[in-house]
Length: 93
Image 1 (cartoon, helix red, strand yellow):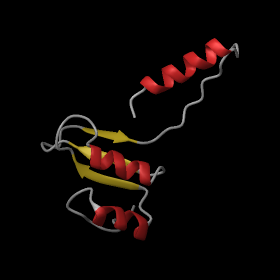
Image 2: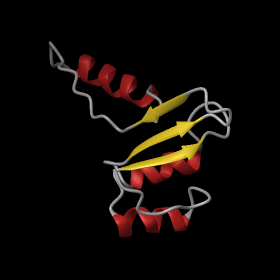
Image 3: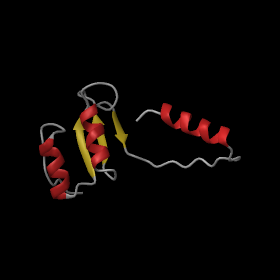
């Protein structure tokens, strides 16, 4: 494991660091529950990136990664396709 750079926030500087250094994992402090929008955007720009957020007290951490999912449709019909589109639209980003 090698630390290839540091940044104070998920910003353009962090985005450039990920591009420049080819980071696979970013370790950051969690500012609250869930994944902040700026880190979500960073992960969408770099889909292979994994993000580890550590709580300020250091007692817990969460790993975030984009994982493709595949769900086979047993029956293909206009109704099941419409249901699949509706279901996909309601999933969190």
